[in-house]
Picture 1 (cartoon, rainbow, N blue to C red):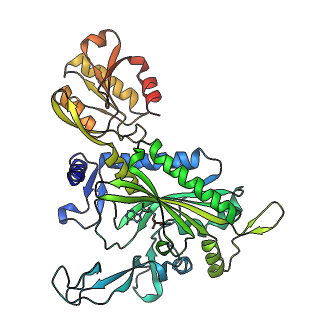
Picture 2: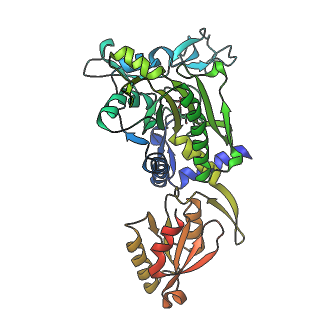
Picture 3: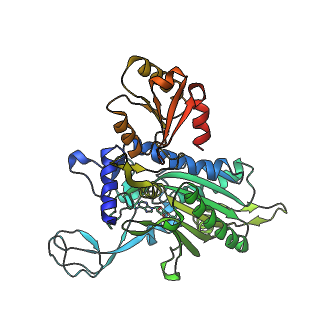
Length: 430
Ligand code: GAP
């Protein structure tokens, strides 16, 4: 049943232009995916919701957009060059690498396996025309380091005061060996990360608990069913090299519980490391002119995993009339298309009015006009991509200067005056 649900979601995503397999016409490429016309809107809405709730609506957080390529010394200071590795075995014959997981012979060709070796997960590249060891750099495996290396710039160029945060959304890259479960684990993905700077260890403990709650509630406020979410504390031996404590927010995917986001207490590790390696002072000067090395709490989430969780949670099958329907019950803030405008039948006065309404709304909301096929089929198409409202123009109501607005979830219809449609949508799309 659960496997079927995942299969149905993957199929829906392909069929309706939400997510496609990467490089498909060349046979694809493992663990890469592309977002289609509806998917890019959904993903953008997830990022926008995060940015509005975590940056715009808060006075203690500022934004940043740092580079994917950085001076390789950043990754020495951060510990990634040495520590960001997975133990893997390699086949001596076909040279494929695998997590050991009790393997005795190569699962691909039956060849002999090496002892486990540490393989770094960072993608290497060379800067400049010559590929040699002197110009190696990496595609960033997390956006966080871009924030730490700009800590001084932000202090010097803004009026932030402790406690404060720097937020960033951006691509990260990891040479993952473990197979992906659709977009759950990919080679290239987006993160939304906040580095939240506080004055001392006691404040860090408090902030750590506050952030776990804030971030847990964020998913619920955007429609995820609370019973599908869990907080999980990392045991000491599981902690990343930089972390004093980590709590994960996990979601119950059809393939099992999976991490959506980690809240980490990074202590003073990062600023101390960058101070040591760069020789620059990375301290905050408090009101008494005292230099403080802030402690850091990091809520770090994956955009693609959030999108997947919102999709899985929203996916539903029920009945409309006597037909089975597939519906994405997405939160209106996340829905790719906010409303579809449909003439009941393809007759001139209805088409004209529906097109006028579309023209009026399209500068304010992502809306679609559709006149192809029966109205029932057109409703089903919109249900499948999670459109919360269908605005239908029929003869009887047109005469009265009104339209019917059908709700995706209940399939109930309201009558709305044509000149009040925009207000209606604004009110309901919060
Ligand atoms: N700066 C801390 C950090 O990067 P992480 O737990 O390694 O922590 C944070 O990554 C989040 O990034 C994860 O919770 C997950 O949502 C997402 N993520 C990590 N690796 C991923 C991958 N290979 N594919 C998709 N998302 C990934």
